[in-house]
Image 1 (cartoon, rainbow, N blue to C red):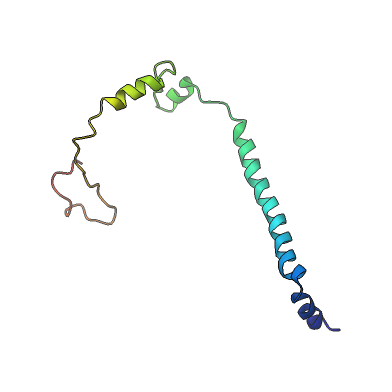
Image 2 (cartoon, rainbow, N blue to C red):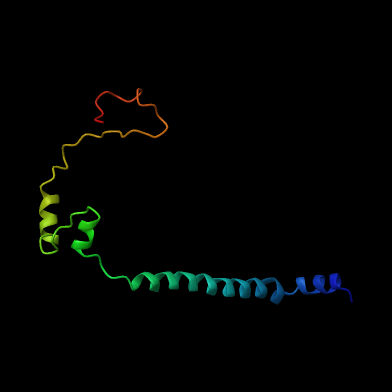
Length: 105
């Protein structure tokens, strides 16, 4: 029996047709999940950023006690959602001259 005959014989079997691709997917999925879990644990070890560290980069953080769910809800509650106007933003592929003059630059 030659190699081609053996390949033809096994290719008609259900275990070869469905079992081999299943095993390949299981092994490949295992390696893929390993990469994702390594990424997860790599960034889980990072410490939160302190306000002093952010000021070094020019970002002013608010105090955590000043920002609460209730204070943010009050800000959102005061927004008038009944009266609004849809303003179209500029698209990268459009020229600057073709935009309406009401756009603020």
